[in-house]
Image (cartoon, rainbow, N blue to C red; front, side, top):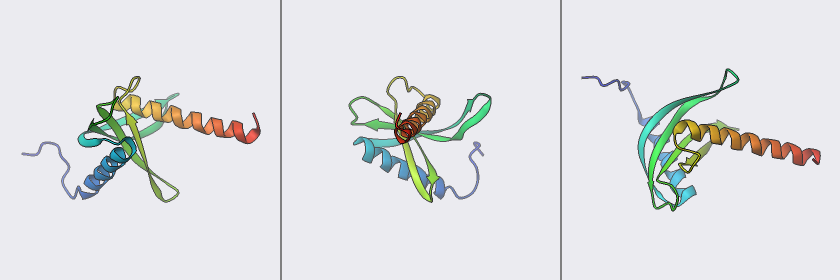
Length: 118
């Protein structure tokens, strides 16, 4: 009986999840086990600010977190990995995306201030 899982080759998904697991383990010095995939659509002022799949990992060996949210994207022809630990205020895939967007915006604004001398 079909349980809603798409038919076809899912090796690409498995490779992506494995690369995210390795990224988490490397960045946060812990072990990670994939727990779930969650679709997140983040709106800002009525427009889609982010739309994608967030992979959820249970982690062991980290002093502050038991879960991590991760996704990847392409930039300049290279894969970039985003990992967000479940440490307050992060408590879901949705808040992980919001925190990552805010951190990116803050970083970009800091760079603009530095370039203008402000």
